[in-house]
Amino acid sequence: MPRFAAGMRLTHRPQIDVFRTEDPPALTLVVEIPGANPDAMTIVLDGRRLLIAGERERPRVEGRWYRSEIEYGPFEREVSLPFDVSVEEASASYRRGLLRIVLPVADSPPAPVRVSIEVLRTG
Image (cartoon, rainbow, N blue to C red; front, side, top):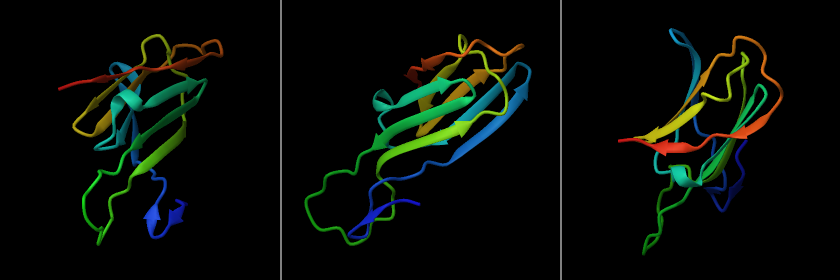
C-alpha cells in the first residue's frame, strides 16, 4: 500500500501488463509510466525476477495545489517471470509513456546472472 504524507503519495505503483508471444517466443512487459524519465529508470533481470525502478517527478508549480490525483514519486516493481528468458537478447524501449520490455524465452535455463537492461527512447 502506498505511503501518504499530508494527503500526497510518496510512492506509486505503475500498472503492468505481461504477455507471451509464440512467434517469436518472448515474454513482453508493458509498464504504464507517462512523464517518467527513461534515462533515470533501472531495469535489472536476476534469474526469473525482473526489477523496474525509477521516478516520476511532480512538476513544480507557482501556486497552491487544490487537487492532486496523479501519482508521482519513486516507484519500484518486482515481477516474477513465469519462464526462463534469454538475457543476451533482452531489450527495453520507452515511447509515449509506455515502457516496453521484451525478454526472449530461453530454450534451456540460463546460468544464473544479474544484468541491467538499457532503456532506449523511441519515437
